[in-house]
Structure formats: C-alpha cells, structure tokens
Length: 101
Image (tube, rainbow, N blue to C red; front, side):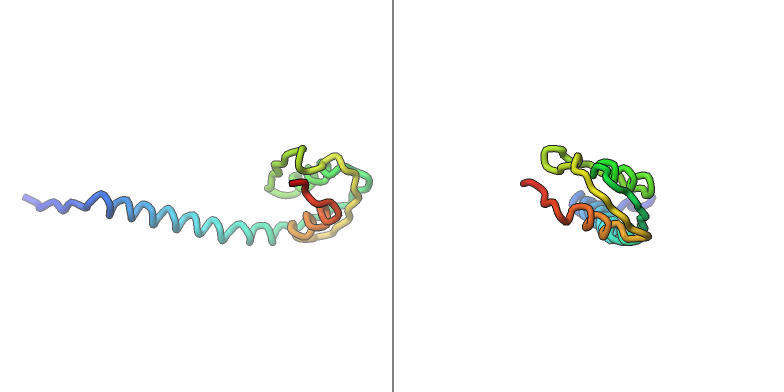
C-alpha cells in the first residue's frame, strides 16, 4: 500500500500564483520588445488620424482602440516616415495635439 502525501491547499494555491505571476512577467517583458521591432513606413498627406492608424494596423499586428471623445481622430495630418519604430511614429502623430482629459 502506497502512502499518499497530501499537499495543503494554501501550498497548491501558492504554486498556481507563482506560475501565473511568472507568465505575466514574461508577457510584460515581451511587449516593449515587439513595439520597438515594428518598422513603419508611411507617406500620407492630408489624411485623418484615423486613416493613419488604419495604415499602421495594415502594416503591423497592432490594433488601436480609442475613444473619439478623448482623441480627435478626425484631425487632418500629413506624416512621412521610413522604417521608423512604432513608438516614434505615434510620437510624431500625436506630438502637436495633447489628449483631452
């Protein structure tokens, strides 16, 4: 007859939490790396911010969610970038227009 070892519930929950936190940490590390590796090329004149975001979505795996009450996506812009990182493109796009809070 084998002797069964019982593990207390709090130890099981601790192990589950540790694995969960480890997975979250790995995800948090990978997000900035992906953002920096995405290279964007755009040559758009007199288009809306919404059209620029759509062009970025077509070139990358990113999808943008925004509130039209906060972000003015109907603003007309011109942007020209060649092989720029996503963060720099978004900085250029929203530099002149602060978000309404």
